Length: 211
Image (cartoon, rainbow, N blue to C red; front, side, top):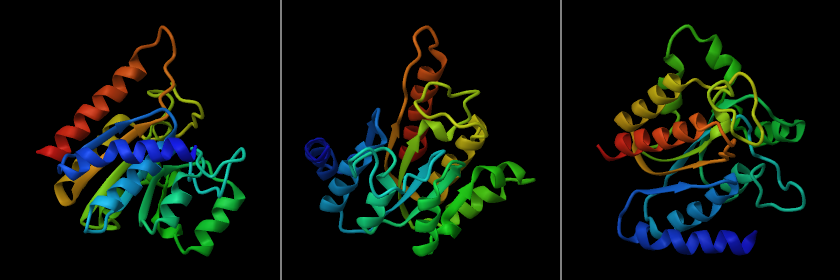
């Protein structure tokens, strides 16, 4: 995994040095780490991370490696990156303790609380917690499996399509999106709709970030 992270880091450097908006599409969510380190190597200004995900991804290691989809935000924290998590609905006891110990619970927007909101005030609150320059990291299991079943660890109760777009559009209006990734798509043969959703999501996010 360390070699893969280094290769991603090196591949990300040239477009970032050219001032390009880097959009990364992956399978495993751990790929974000190589992009994070490349951004830190190139940029002089700090940035923060908006994570859309069903899971907190704050485990110190998983299945014998610190570079796992279950660990990416723990790695971000080690890099000193502030982050806000949206849509989380599956978290281990260890991750809950991590959030308490690091005083990060206020930056987690739990899915059940989003669904209980009578309005879109949560969108403004999310954006308000983020700094001026934001990297967006989307694990597709953050979306509800009714629209995104094609992922390895689906969880019921996720974000809907329009709620996701409202958040991303408002983010682009009030902050600068410096890059993004979309990960954890696991295509289902004969079911193209989730694949199209990811393509459409990337298209929308590019449009929001570049306008």
